[in-house]
Amino acid sequence: MTERPAQRLLLVHAHPDDETIANGATMAKYIAEGTGVTLVTCTAGEMGEILVPELAHLAADQEDALGEHRRGEIAAAMKELGVTDHRWLGGFGTYRDSGMQWHADGHAIAADTIHDNAFWYADLTEAADHLVTIIREVRPQVLVTYDQFGHYGHPDHIQAHRVAMYAAQLAAVPSYRRELGEPWDIAKIYWTAMSESRMRAGLRELRAAGDETTFEGMDPEGRIPMASPDADLAAEIDATPFAELKMDAMRAYPTQITVDGPFFALSNNLGNTIWGVEHYRLAKGAPGPQGEHGLETDLFAGLAPDRP
Image (cartoon, rainbow, N blue to C red; front, side, top):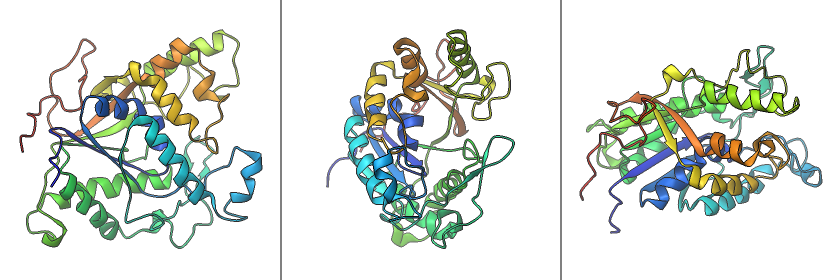
Protein backbone atom coordinates (compact mmCIF):
# COMPACT_ATOMS: atom_id res chain seq x y z
CA MET A 1 0.00 0.00 0.00
CA THR A 2 1.32 3.46 -0.93
CA GLU A 3 2.07 5.57 2.14
CA ARG A 4 -0.22 8.55 2.54
CA PRO A 5 1.27 12.05 2.54
CA ALA A 6 1.47 13.57 6.04
CA GLN A 7 -0.93 16.35 5.01
CA ARG A 8 -4.07 15.62 3.00
CA LEU A 9 -6.54 18.12 1.53
CA LEU A 10 -9.94 17.22 0.06
CA LEU A 11 -11.93 19.66 -2.09
CA VAL A 12 -15.56 19.17 -3.15
CA HIS A 13 -16.79 21.25 -6.10
CA ALA A 14 -19.92 21.27 -8.24
CA HIS A 15 -18.66 21.58 -11.84
CA PRO A 16 -15.41 21.56 -13.81
CA ASP A 17 -13.69 24.99 -13.53
CA ASP A 18 -15.19 25.84 -10.10
CA GLU A 19 -12.16 24.35 -8.40
CA THR A 20 -9.65 26.35 -10.43
CA ILE A 21 -11.43 29.69 -10.09
CA ALA A 22 -11.85 29.34 -6.32
CA ASN A 23 -8.85 27.30 -5.20
CA GLY A 24 -6.47 26.76 -8.12
CA ALA A 25 -3.52 28.60 -6.60
CA THR A 26 -4.03 26.95 -3.21
CA MET A 27 -4.10 23.50 -4.80
CA ALA A 28 -0.94 24.14 -6.81
CA LYS A 29 0.87 25.49 -3.74
CA TYR A 30 0.05 22.53 -1.53
CA ILE A 31 0.92 20.03 -4.25
CA ALA A 32 4.31 21.69 -4.67
CA GLU A 33 4.85 21.31 -0.91
CA GLY A 34 4.07 17.59 -0.99
CA THR A 35 0.54 17.70 0.40
CA GLY A 36 -1.90 15.11 -0.90
CA VAL A 37 -4.68 16.89 -2.79
CA THR A 38 -7.89 15.10 -3.77
CA LEU A 39 -10.55 16.84 -5.85
CA VAL A 40 -14.13 15.54 -6.07
CA THR A 41 -16.35 17.02 -8.79
CA CYS A 42 -20.09 16.43 -8.41
CA THR A 43 -21.25 16.95 -12.02
CA ALA A 44 -19.72 17.36 -15.47
CA GLY A 45 -21.30 20.77 -16.03
CA GLU A 46 -23.59 19.58 -18.82
CA MET A 47 -25.81 22.68 -18.61
CA GLY A 48 -23.04 25.27 -18.79
CA GLU A 49 -22.94 28.05 -21.35
CA ILE A 50 -20.63 27.51 -24.31
CA LEU A 51 -18.39 30.45 -25.15
CA VAL A 52 -16.78 28.86 -28.22
CA PRO A 53 -19.17 29.30 -31.20
CA GLU A 54 -17.82 26.32 -33.13
CA LEU A 55 -18.66 24.08 -30.15
CA ALA A 56 -22.24 25.31 -29.78
CA HIS A 57 -23.46 21.95 -31.09
CA LEU A 58 -22.41 20.38 -27.76
CA ALA A 59 -25.15 22.26 -25.89
CA ALA A 60 -27.79 20.43 -23.87
CA ASP A 61 -30.52 21.40 -26.33
CA GLN A 62 -28.50 20.05 -29.29
CA GLU A 63 -26.09 17.09 -29.01
CA ASP A 64 -25.98 17.26 -25.20
CA ALA A 65 -22.28 16.39 -25.26
CA LEU A 66 -20.83 19.25 -23.23
CA GLY A 67 -20.23 17.08 -20.17
CA GLU A 68 -17.87 14.77 -22.01
CA HIS A 69 -16.04 17.78 -23.45
CA ARG A 70 -15.66 19.37 -20.02
CA ARG A 71 -14.33 16.05 -18.78
CA GLY A 72 -11.39 16.66 -21.06
CA GLU A 73 -11.09 20.29 -19.97
CA ILE A 74 -10.82 19.44 -16.29
CA ALA A 75 -8.24 16.76 -17.02
CA ALA A 76 -6.12 19.36 -18.81
CA ALA A 77 -6.60 21.88 -16.01
CA MET A 78 -5.61 19.40 -13.31
CA LYS A 79 -2.48 18.54 -15.28
CA GLU A 80 -1.51 22.23 -15.16
CA LEU A 81 -2.05 22.38 -11.39
CA GLY A 82 -0.40 19.03 -10.72
CA VAL A 83 -3.50 17.35 -9.31
CA THR A 84 -3.29 13.59 -9.86
CA ASP A 85 -6.20 12.48 -7.67
CA HIS A 86 -9.41 13.74 -9.30
CA ARG A 87 -12.68 11.88 -8.85
CA TRP A 88 -16.31 12.24 -9.93
CA LEU A 89 -18.87 11.86 -7.15
CA GLY A 90 -20.30 8.38 -7.61
CA GLY A 91 -18.41 8.03 -10.90
CA PHE A 92 -18.62 10.11 -14.07
CA GLY A 93 -22.19 10.78 -15.12
CA THR A 94 -23.83 9.74 -11.86
CA TYR A 95 -25.17 13.25 -11.30
CA ARG A 96 -26.04 15.80 -13.96
CA ASP A 97 -25.59 19.56 -13.85
CA SER A 98 -28.90 21.02 -12.63
CA GLY A 99 -28.64 24.26 -14.57
CA MET A 100 -29.58 27.67 -13.17
CA GLN A 101 -31.07 31.05 -13.93
CA TRP A 102 -30.44 34.51 -12.53
CA HIS A 103 -32.73 36.08 -9.96
CA ALA A 104 -33.52 39.80 -10.24
CA ASP A 105 -31.48 40.35 -7.06
CA GLY A 106 -28.31 39.18 -8.80
CA HIS A 107 -27.89 35.65 -7.45
CA ALA A 108 -28.50 32.27 -9.05
CA ILE A 109 -31.59 30.11 -8.52
CA ALA A 110 -32.77 26.77 -9.87
CA ALA A 111 -33.80 26.60 -13.50
CA ASP A 112 -37.46 26.26 -14.46
CA THR A 113 -36.81 22.86 -16.05
CA ILE A 114 -34.48 20.41 -14.33
CA HIS A 115 -33.33 17.02 -15.63
CA ASP A 116 -34.52 13.97 -13.66
CA ASN A 117 -30.90 13.01 -12.95
CA ALA A 118 -29.93 16.50 -11.78
CA PHE A 119 -27.65 16.80 -8.77
CA TRP A 120 -30.23 19.13 -7.19
CA TYR A 121 -32.58 16.13 -7.00
CA ALA A 122 -29.97 13.71 -5.62
CA ASP A 123 -30.83 11.74 -2.52
CA LEU A 124 -28.69 13.40 0.15
CA THR A 125 -27.69 10.24 2.00
CA GLU A 126 -26.91 8.35 -1.20
CA ALA A 127 -24.73 11.16 -2.51
CA ALA A 128 -23.06 11.61 0.87
CA ASP A 129 -22.23 7.91 1.03
CA HIS A 130 -20.23 8.22 -2.19
CA LEU A 131 -18.18 10.89 -0.47
CA VAL A 132 -17.96 9.00 2.84
CA THR A 133 -16.13 6.24 0.98
CA ILE A 134 -13.60 8.75 -0.35
CA ILE A 135 -13.16 10.47 3.01
CA ARG A 136 -12.48 7.18 4.76
CA GLU A 137 -10.00 6.17 2.08
CA VAL A 138 -8.11 9.46 1.76
CA ARG A 139 -8.43 10.48 5.45
CA PRO A 140 -8.02 14.22 4.87
CA GLN A 141 -7.30 16.56 7.76
CA VAL A 142 -8.83 19.47 5.81
CA LEU A 143 -11.96 19.70 3.65
CA VAL A 144 -12.80 22.66 1.40
CA THR A 145 -16.26 23.23 -0.06
CA TYR A 146 -18.87 26.01 -0.43
CA ASP A 147 -20.94 27.83 2.17
CA GLN A 148 -24.65 27.11 2.66
CA PHE A 149 -25.56 29.49 -0.19
CA GLY A 150 -23.15 27.87 -2.60
CA HIS A 151 -21.26 31.18 -2.84
CA TYR A 152 -23.81 32.72 -5.21
CA GLY A 153 -26.91 30.55 -5.09
CA HIS A 154 -26.30 27.94 -7.79
CA PRO A 155 -28.33 24.87 -6.81
CA ASP A 156 -25.44 22.50 -7.50
CA HIS A 157 -23.12 24.54 -5.28
CA ILE A 158 -25.70 24.46 -2.50
CA GLN A 159 -26.11 20.71 -2.94
CA ALA A 160 -22.33 20.20 -2.93
CA HIS A 161 -22.20 22.05 0.39
CA ARG A 162 -24.94 19.84 1.83
CA VAL A 163 -23.35 16.63 0.59
CA ALA A 164 -19.86 17.57 1.80
CA MET A 165 -20.97 18.68 5.25
CA TYR A 166 -23.22 15.66 5.77
CA ALA A 167 -20.61 13.22 4.50
CA ALA A 168 -18.03 14.70 6.85
CA GLN A 169 -20.36 14.00 9.78
CA LEU A 170 -21.26 10.49 8.67
CA ALA A 171 -17.66 9.49 7.92
CA ALA A 172 -16.71 10.14 11.56
CA VAL A 173 -19.39 7.86 13.06
CA PRO A 174 -17.79 4.49 13.94
CA SER A 175 -21.06 2.55 13.61
CA TYR A 176 -22.12 4.13 10.31
CA ARG A 177 -21.83 1.93 7.20
CA ARG A 178 -18.75 0.04 8.35
CA GLU A 179 -18.42 -1.45 4.87
CA LEU A 180 -17.50 2.02 3.57
CA GLY A 181 -14.23 2.03 5.50
CA GLU A 182 -12.76 2.89 8.87
CA PRO A 183 -14.23 6.05 10.44
CA TRP A 184 -12.42 9.34 9.93
CA ASP A 185 -13.10 12.71 11.54
CA ILE A 186 -11.97 15.66 9.42
CA ALA A 187 -10.24 18.14 11.73
CA LYS A 188 -10.91 21.35 9.81
CA ILE A 189 -13.54 22.35 7.26
CA TYR A 190 -13.31 25.57 5.25
CA TRP A 191 -15.75 27.32 2.95
CA THR A 192 -14.40 29.12 -0.10
CA ALA A 193 -14.65 32.91 0.04
CA MET A 194 -13.77 36.06 -1.86
CA SER A 195 -12.45 38.99 0.15
CA GLU A 196 -14.81 41.96 -0.12
CA SER A 197 -12.04 44.53 0.39
CA ARG A 198 -9.83 42.99 -2.30
CA MET A 199 -12.74 42.72 -4.72
CA ARG A 200 -13.66 46.36 -4.15
CA ALA A 201 -10.05 47.49 -4.60
CA GLY A 202 -9.77 45.60 -7.87
CA LEU A 203 -13.05 47.03 -9.17
CA ARG A 204 -11.98 50.56 -8.24
CA GLU A 205 -8.74 50.17 -10.18
CA LEU A 206 -10.61 48.85 -13.22
CA ARG A 207 -13.19 51.64 -13.15
CA ALA A 208 -10.48 54.27 -12.67
CA ALA A 209 -8.80 52.90 -15.80
CA GLY A 210 -12.05 53.41 -17.72
CA ASP A 211 -13.01 49.73 -17.83
CA GLU A 212 -16.78 49.48 -17.36
CA THR A 213 -17.29 46.07 -19.00
CA THR A 214 -15.21 43.78 -16.79
CA PHE A 215 -17.53 42.57 -14.01
CA GLU A 216 -20.20 44.66 -15.69
CA GLY A 217 -22.87 45.93 -13.34
CA MET A 218 -20.75 45.59 -10.21
CA ASP A 219 -20.26 48.87 -8.37
CA PRO A 220 -17.10 48.98 -6.21
CA GLU A 221 -19.03 51.07 -3.70
CA GLY A 222 -22.24 49.01 -3.90
CA ARG A 223 -23.38 45.50 -3.08
CA ILE A 224 -21.16 42.66 -4.32
CA PRO A 225 -23.17 39.44 -3.83
CA MET A 226 -20.26 37.03 -4.30
CA ALA A 227 -17.90 38.71 -1.82
CA SER A 228 -17.52 37.85 1.87
CA PRO A 229 -17.02 40.56 4.51
CA ASP A 230 -13.41 40.50 5.62
CA ALA A 231 -14.56 39.96 9.21
CA ASP A 232 -15.87 36.53 8.15
CA LEU A 233 -12.54 35.36 6.72
CA ALA A 234 -10.36 32.95 8.68
CA ALA A 235 -7.54 32.04 6.29
CA GLU A 236 -5.59 33.78 3.56
CA ILE A 237 -3.43 31.55 1.38
CA ASP A 238 -0.83 33.61 -0.44
CA ALA A 239 0.00 31.49 -3.45
CA THR A 240 1.05 34.29 -5.80
CA PRO A 241 4.02 32.25 -7.11
CA PHE A 242 1.39 29.84 -8.46
CA ALA A 243 -0.95 32.45 -9.97
CA GLU A 244 0.33 31.75 -13.48
CA LEU A 245 -0.31 28.03 -13.04
CA LYS A 246 -3.85 28.93 -12.01
CA MET A 247 -4.22 31.10 -15.12
CA ASP A 248 -2.91 28.26 -17.29
CA ALA A 249 -5.46 25.93 -15.72
CA MET A 250 -8.21 28.46 -16.40
CA ARG A 251 -7.15 28.61 -20.02
CA ALA A 252 -7.89 24.89 -20.16
CA TYR A 253 -11.60 25.82 -19.94
CA PRO A 254 -12.23 27.69 -23.22
CA THR A 255 -15.91 26.71 -23.28
CA GLN A 256 -16.43 28.42 -19.92
CA ILE A 257 -13.84 31.21 -19.58
CA THR A 258 -12.88 33.68 -22.31
CA VAL A 259 -9.26 34.72 -22.39
CA ASP A 260 -10.28 38.35 -22.85
CA GLY A 261 -12.92 38.15 -20.13
CA PRO A 262 -12.82 39.32 -16.51
CA PHE A 263 -10.36 36.68 -15.34
CA PHE A 264 -7.72 37.86 -17.81
CA ALA A 265 -8.58 41.53 -18.25
CA LEU A 266 -6.79 42.63 -15.09
CA SER A 267 -3.22 43.89 -15.19
CA ASN A 268 -0.63 41.21 -14.41
CA ASN A 269 0.14 42.72 -11.03
CA LEU A 270 -3.48 43.10 -9.99
CA GLY A 271 -4.32 39.72 -11.49
CA ASN A 272 -1.68 37.98 -9.40
CA THR A 273 -2.96 39.74 -6.29
CA ILE A 274 -6.56 38.75 -6.91
CA TRP A 275 -6.10 35.25 -8.31
CA GLY A 276 -2.97 34.22 -6.41
CA VAL A 277 -4.31 35.03 -2.92
CA GLU A 278 -7.29 32.89 -1.94
CA HIS A 279 -9.51 33.23 1.12
CA TYR A 280 -11.50 30.86 3.30
CA ARG A 281 -14.05 30.84 6.10
CA LEU A 282 -13.56 28.32 8.90
CA ALA A 283 -16.63 26.08 9.35
CA LYS A 284 -15.17 23.44 11.68
CA GLY A 285 -12.08 23.21 13.85
CA ALA A 286 -10.07 25.60 15.97
CA PRO A 287 -8.21 28.49 14.30
CA GLY A 288 -4.48 27.99 14.13
CA PRO A 289 -1.69 30.58 14.45
CA GLN A 290 -2.42 33.75 12.49
CA GLY A 291 -0.27 35.89 10.20
CA GLU A 292 0.16 39.64 9.98
CA HIS A 293 -3.36 40.20 8.61
CA GLY A 294 -4.94 38.36 11.53
CA LEU A 295 -5.72 35.34 9.35
CA GLU A 296 -4.32 31.84 9.14
CA THR A 297 -1.77 31.51 6.35
CA ASP A 298 -2.00 27.72 6.22
CA LEU A 299 -5.16 25.60 6.08
CA PHE A 300 -3.36 23.04 8.24
CA ALA A 301 -2.44 25.64 10.87
CA GLY A 302 -2.68 24.23 14.37
CA LEU A 303 -2.77 20.61 13.22
CA ALA A 304 0.00 18.18 14.05
CA PRO A 305 1.25 16.34 10.96
CA ASP A 306 -0.12 12.86 10.54
CA ARG A 307 2.50 10.24 11.22
CA PRO A 308 1.60 6.89 9.60
